[in-house]
Image (cartoon, rainbow, N blue to C red; front, side):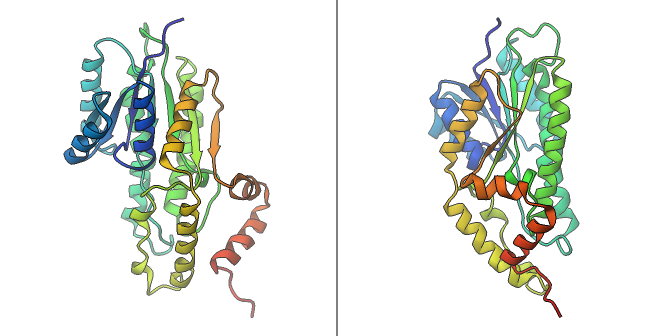
Length: 287
């Protein structure tokens, strides 16, 4: 059997889950190529993670930059292949869908869905979607979320993008079976990561009727973050999934899994509506 290349590409490697995964792969002696958008982040990560980390400067929404990075990596690997792709880059900006600006909503899909697919298309030849690939076909992990299957209020744009990413990933997995490239969905729950801190400004919605409920929701999100998994733990799990001979189709990595994942998916939709409404204050008062 051909060997599996010990090279990994991780998008969004500067912070959060991407950074945690990069650290863990480097510690296991993989060569990690990590996408960052700022030269300062490239310098910082190179200094922190050492020579096994190679920064690639591109934004997942920039088609030309993605293609240039794919060519750069093709040249650098000199005829070999890429062992894995971790599609991690993502954004999460809260807001009620009635009032959230459309350009913000579009941005979620541009980054979380189309960006992930754009990167996947560009690097698939290195992952083995071609004839006469020199090493074992690589693997793709799509970093989704518990909200890729459980919809919560005030995060509708993020939820919609993650639902879309999961559907896309299922189709992609079935198509890439032709080449033996595996596609795995990873759905974390609460994680101690700055992604939420970047998108929880709610003052713009102060004039709306949603503002009181959003204040309570933000407190719940912050409390959940405090109970969340560390980025190092998520990184370890991502490495384990990559190294599993026959990985599952989807992994739910959720703290307090019974109440945070199992029960919400088993409850009838109307019952979950009622529960979330009570928790957030979104239930319309009975006259």
